[in-house]
Amino acid sequence: MKTSGSAFSASQKLEILADTIGEILGTSGTVRINNSRDHDRQPLSPHAISEKAKKMYRDKAPIDYNLLGSNCEHYMNLSRCDYPTSAQITAAGMAVLKYILAIGV
Image (cartoon, rainbow, N blue to C red; front, top):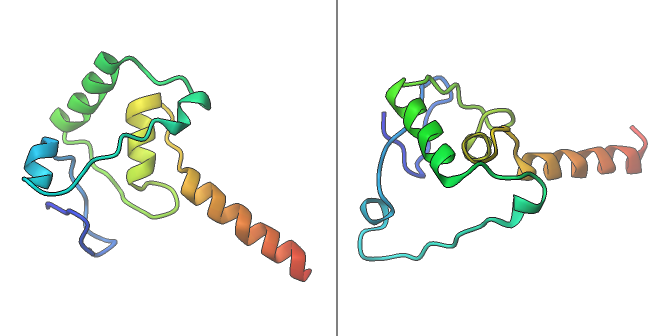
């Protein structure tokens, strides 16, 4: 199943696709490289990142997508730093925790 920014059922399995930026954007759009988390975790070498992603693609590794524990940011960090994490989910969780503590639930 190909998905590209579209809604899909949580019960559907995702697959890793091998597309170039040019194939995804065509002649429109811009790309912003975001390596802002590199100070938190040492990224793997470009070769190791590429090999890890290619292996997951070759192995057709099943991806059980879920927003909180296995989303695209988790996959990117797993590929890049060998550690699946999502700063967005962590920040959202902290905001919820602060709210709960503030209202005294």
